[in-house]
Amino acid sequence: MEQILIEYEFPSPSVALLGKTMQAYERRYATRIVMKKGSQITRSDIAGCTAYVSVRGNASLSATLMKTAQKMGKPCLAFVDDDFLLLKKAGAFPARRKKHFRTVLENANALLCVNPLLEEKYTPYTLDHRSICFDPILPDDAFVGDAQIGERHADTVSILYAANATHAIFFQKYITPVLKNVARQVNKPLRLVFMGVRPQLDPQIEGISAEYYGVQAYDVYRKRLLAGGFAIGVAPLEPNEFTSMKYYNKFIDYASAGISGIYTDCAPYTMVVESGRNGLLCKAESAAWEKALVTMVNDDALRMRCAQNALADARRLCSEERNLELVRQGFLSLEGCKHKSVGFVLPLGFARLFGRAFVLAEHAEKACGIAVHAGFPTLLKKIASHVRARKAFTSGKTG
Image 1 (tube, one colour):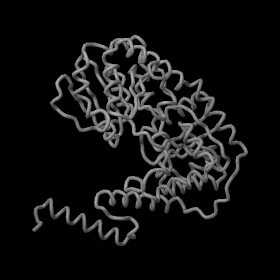
Image 2: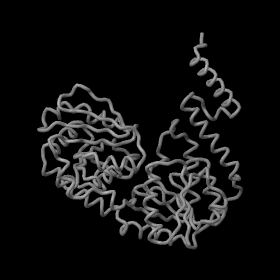
Image 3: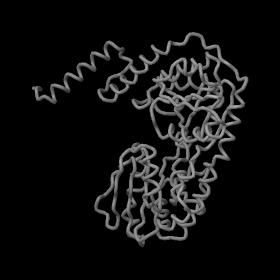
Image 4: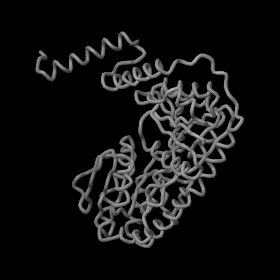
């Protein structure tokens, strides 16, 4: 039996989505799928697999594991859903992670991705210059029924913004400035719901209420998405090369829940949204967002049409029939793939130790402003000093 080993650094929506797809793959093709955190993977795990996949691999341990799998003659794939090489050097994604990401790519035989622009950019980094571009699969119970869509359009219109906390700036830039104008022009009260993000709002806008939910586990998020009674979903984005490489997951999220979406008129949304048919596209301008919101709230027929068409599109895009065959052919194409002469690879025990040390160092960078390149002795001294200062402060012993 085939056994595919999938490595990830920590749980995330990307891991959850790929996991849903590979669970369906496991059922259909009698293949054993093993998903493990990199810190738990052993040489025996790699030896026992017939293919190895690194999910968003950009940690030192991910790079070492990929090289180990390549050295052991395993077909290797890199799953990528963000343009990591384009991220600016910052505490959240330091330059050393870009180096590890390149190592993962350069030791992969093929690329697994969810955006054709990513496919075009990163496939040449792989050993065999091969790629598989697909949509993650959603099971049937992840979609609302057509009859439920009509229930979303009662006296109050619920508007959802689900996003990463760092995306609050997009809402604040394009939507916050026009909310008062929108409230004056619409014919129904508005309920704003934020999931995972908390943009700044004027709390005194008549006709608009706001609710906030923090970061949630993916399954909890999906349940709340389906049960929330949302009529409209917004997805503001800053048009640039980095955002164009992302997956249009907001379209899938909103569409699968029977929600009519409003999206910035840029990639990746232009890959799936036909304005007026399965959602609205609007320019990255506050005036355009104001017009789109007023139109979508006031036009019941438009909302219903967009929600119904988007739901049908999401079912098609995320279907097993469409995507499992793509993934299957990708894995089959790796038979007889090239294998790189890797040379020395750090033993996994040491790699895990160093991997944990660098994760701790990254936390120290964020919490204390300490640079990892200062060296571990200096780093440890500074961390100890910081901890002593914190203890002294909390115990009231500071002068």
